[in-house]
Image (tube, rainbow, N blue to C red):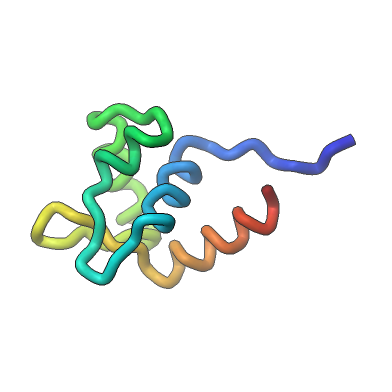
Length: 80
């Protein structure tokens, strides 16, 4: 029996953001689209991820993954 955990949409979004993270931040909408998440849902998820300190919103509309977000991504990669 497999012990793999299915990823939630917000976990998939965070991993997609991490894979394209650069110092200036990344536009979350294309990253969300790459994992099948609509723009409206993406904006809601980004707000939630920012509230729990996994991403930081930048003035340009881009987001940057925080250290907490990077730690979560590493945990998720080890689980999957």
